[in-house]
Length: 196
Length: 166
Image 1 (tube, rainbow over the protein chains, first blue to last red):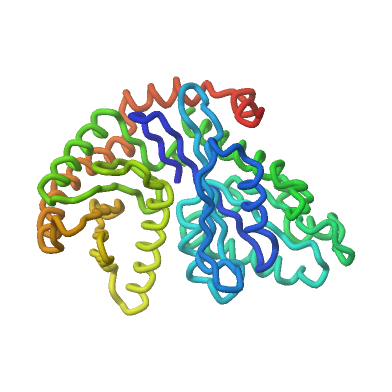
Image 2 (tube, rainbow over the protein chains, first blue to last red):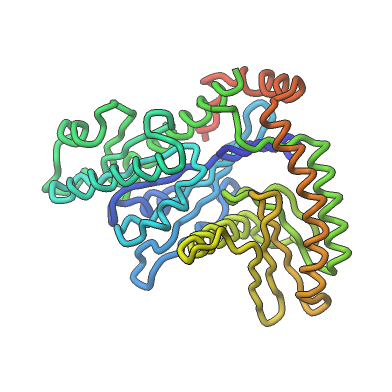
């Protein structure tokens, strides 16, 4: 749910990082937070448990500059990946303008990826949305680990519609900005389409 | 999908500001915020300098969302008012116009009773202002359409790329 304020000349959009637990959603936000110019970012908020697992959400506001006199602001959220926190996940997904699905490339996490993607589709449907109608980007994370599925396998299991995808090593920043750039672009293009 | 789900034009923004300023004085509050349910700040009034208003808005929305989830679990539609009591400052959260969060911060210069009373009155006025805002967004009148078309339709791919050229 984008929010356009003509009085303060701002476009605000909400992007949600979704995916299975320990897949690297929070790591994506942390990397972005580290690398972005201090003037362009707000505080990174993490509502996490004592063991640093996301409890409710992480939140990072980003200001990307202006287009045609309008400041563009992106609010990045992550959901808690653990199955247990399903109700929270649904709340955070509400009103999102775009979704990044962070998949864990390790072979043994394939089932969790598929489950999480189905969970995403269920919750989107409950909000009257679906993956096909929403800016959607996949990120295949942890490409530096040994026991990983091939991109072809991941594509087949998670991305039959051939949405944009990126290989990533979020802890080292590989693919993080490429993913962000693509989802931001898709969200703004969608907004532009709505105006035509 | 429509271009945006919430669009606020200058004249309505001014009305909201005036309404907030009045509530601030009448409720003897420190600061007041209007936030949409997704955590986007719409308007504010009072002492906000040095305050991280973006985080405030997001957490308030998270709070409302979580409490709304709790309400449904026990068979309530929602809890229309939340109150958080601190040592010095207190938060009063309520829903106006069904989907907007009104957050009032106050201290010992005011009281919960006074804030509740004034919020209730101000809410009626805000309901009307937001009714107009929602109506405009839905009907997409000429003015809105013109601004949309000139402002956003001409956004080019290069404009979007430029955002990342730092």
